[in-house]
Image 1 (cartoon, one colour):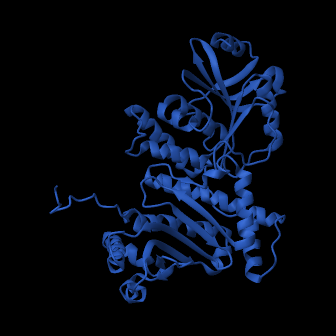
Image 2 (cartoon, one colour; image 1 turned 60 degrees about the vertical axis):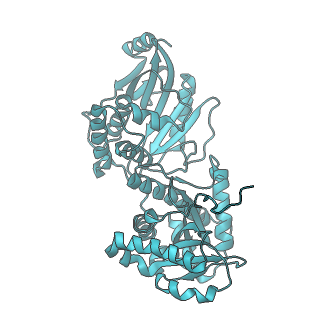
Amino acid sequence: MKKTDFDQLILEKEIVLRPAKLIPTSKPGDEMTLTSIFLSSIRLIKEFKTLLMKPTDIRINGKIYVYTEVDFEQVSNGERIDGLLIVVRAGIIHEAVLFEMKNKNDEINKDQLMSYLNIAKEMGINNFITISNQFVLAPTQYPISIKLPRGINLYHFSWSYIITIAHILLFDNKTNIEDHDQVEIMKEVVEYFGNPISGICGFSQMKPGWKEVVERIISGTQLKSNDPDIIETVESWLQEEKDLVLQLSQALGLFVKSGETKFKNNYQARLDHDMKMLLKEKCLSSKLVIADAVSNLNVTAYLDKRSIEMSVYLNAPENKMNRGKLSWIKRQLDYSQKRNEEEFNKIKDDIRIGIFVKYYNAPIKIKIESIDDIVDELKNKEIKHFEIYYLKDLGKKFSSRRKFVEIIEDMLIDYYSIIVQNLKKWNKPSPKIIENRIVE
């Protein structure tokens, strides 16, 4: 469709909508206010638009127009869709995206969404994006089960994911916003999104099934795979994993990834895998992938022990004997302590060094102060690698839906800032010229 034809439909009131404004006059905290600010920021900030749409197949090259409260009179039966974005090139609309927004505790409504998707199909709009405080592992996944009309692409963003993108753009890194005025606009948007009045909130508590499952495991009650509480527990864990990723991303100013590659874009497979792990091993585990960090960061919740464990991995130096290897890892932890002694001492008693010895099935775990005493015990054995653990026993707090989230999120930031960011990998030295070599 030509943009002029589109404008004519608006004039003839066959399409009823409002231009989205960065500073709307509607009620603060209202969904329409949030929609207007969000869509306007996409239109005004090039890098925000590019980074946000990167995980989708939506092509955004061209002039962008954004609208709110969209009513397609001929097919909508009076229903208004929250937002519309169109991309115009050479006077022709080449791309269109509809948006459904939720804030506060409102969740995506399946019946409402199906109605909107059918409107999108009738209007020939192929892309639909929903945004809420509900978490998903990737924008291509979805927080509810829904059958899509043929030819429609559906994406979901959590508000926390959007805020993370905005924060990363404001850090001094490769994804900076080039234009100074656009930087200032992004700051204003972030400030509004971060205000409680906006209705944006992160993942704050596990689902009710979490408490039930923890208490059943502690009491020794048999768990069944078809128990709704089991499903809720794993869903809560996956949402908390995503929240951990987003919080660490905001703190570092770069995107942290999570999960195994084999589960990419397959939420159900990941859900099934973690349910089996919970039933068999009574634990749930996540892998955080952080660019340039010493290793992936593993996070495990042991429901039977009511404890949380975080760890990173370091190969032991190949050019040292055991005493040298142990001194190498101890120097790294001493450096972490000197960098932030007060904070380090707060968690020191919860730090363990895992020593992995060739032919041993399990690591030898010791406290930092015991590292010098272990040398003789390891005589004639070969240390292969180390893991640095941060282990905390939560006791009754583990089953608290809200307290568990607060503790694990504080633990992650503490562990990374106090320990992980100060660790360095061992790199094999460059080969040396052989002295006194024989020349024939």
